Length: 203
Image 1: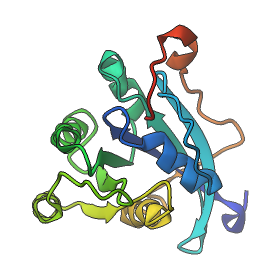
Image 2 (image 1 turned 180 degrees about the horizontal axis):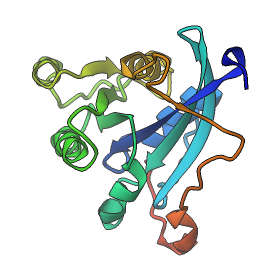
Image 3 (image 1 turned 45 degrees about the vertical axis):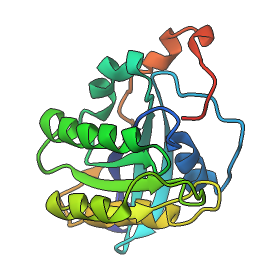
Image 4 (image 1 turned 30 degrees about the horizontal axis):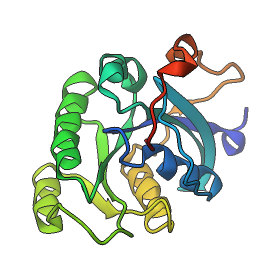
């Protein structure tokens, strides 16, 4: 494989409480689509998306994790080895921001203090916001994280949030993992979970 044809891989995870819009953000970024009919993620799911930037080709392995409490113990299996994370909260639900801060602490403990994190203040299209954005900005500055106010419904800042995270990741030669012909094998725990465990709502 010549240097011109190399493909580099980053594992990224999307984390947050249930119903904050994680899957909707991924759908908007991956396919530029939005659906009002969104069922909660069971365990986790993932997609691959290729991005051409930094004069290189990157293949993002993006894991969308379940936010329900019963799957919390499984989360480390999915974000282990992640180079970056989008932590998402719902601007209309104060508790989702409080939980987002706990997710940030867990990522730094379970993954690495150097894991790159972008905070997404999602559902910016809604009016009944219950989180002071100035408080969020202060929190992000203290923790050296980028902040994007996003809307999966309108597409506002969704692409920008993902690209902002990519720009934080190492991109020099030798600092990223080259994908060979055989991809890494991943464990799909969601395949072991029964369909009837699903609950109403959007994740």
